Image (tube, rainbow, N blue to C red; front, side, top):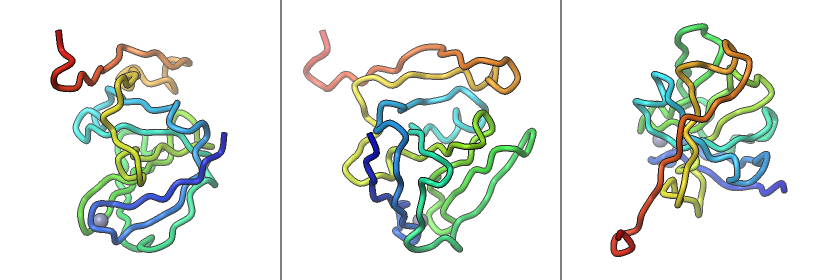
Length: 139
Ligand SMILES: [Zn+2]
């Protein structure tokens, strides 16, 4: 499955096309100190899967900790667009909410254990799932 999707930050300065690794099946939240604050749902894409259409020069790089991962944000509107992973340098994570036609409010999103990072522990571990229950369906 190789759908190419169109994406943009909030203000539209940064636009891109991205070829996902496995559609939105890879949608994840993460417990690491950065993800906990930014709150985005990320989907996986190969490192060469992203093509900038506009605004590559508007992206700001943020790094912390081991300085391995590369977290990119629009310098105009502040929205996280994607990051080059520490856990898999051949992959990027892409902000699902930036992709046209997609919403981060999926029925269920897996939460991975970014606090105990797979690069340190040797394996990905999930800590739970976040459920979205539409109003009216709650029992
Ligand atoms: Zn922007």
